Length: 239
Image 1 (cartoon, rainbow, N blue to C red):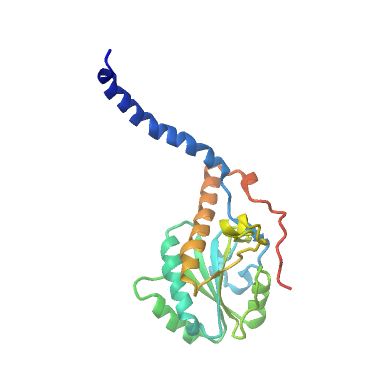
Image 2: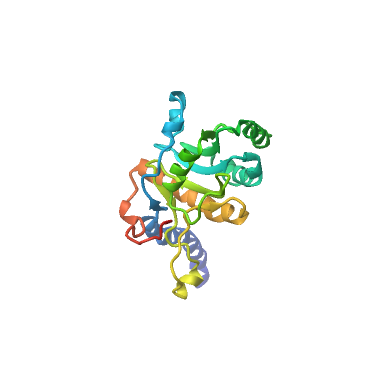
């Protein structure tokens, strides 16, 4: 039998088996899934700030992005718009996703103005404004793992991811590959800056995707809690 006779079947066989081989190489990686780190447990809930009819938007059983807009919400229009365009618009179709914006009592007029800015194209069904006094705002903020205090107007450009069990999610080790290779000191990412567009587009979007993947795997019974990164890594909390 000449080589030309077997050449075509051989090529077809290679073309058929290469994708199968590629999938076999990928398959083990599905068992090495790392979920998004829990950086702080038992975040203070907002239930005490809500009317009975609004209790469904508390942190429990929801995947929440929490932002603090403080006394002057319109002063935070740019970070709020960034959050809307880069996070809300991308994830609003996911089950149990919501954004909670904490604002100070007395800022109702500015909240209405900000809503008009955010609602230019569509109603924000999963974006909720919750009014709180200074003590309540500080109570919730202080229950989070943060690197800096709230501004004097009770606002911050940082936003936080809170899971269905009221645990704050983020990255215990946010070093780049280059920093890891140089054995640089470990540092974490506990919140995401809404002024930094690249941070929202890249890091926060990726972390949200990982969290939704985790819950999807849990629903399918494919989630292995042992795949979480080491939870005994110590992180520095705010004094």
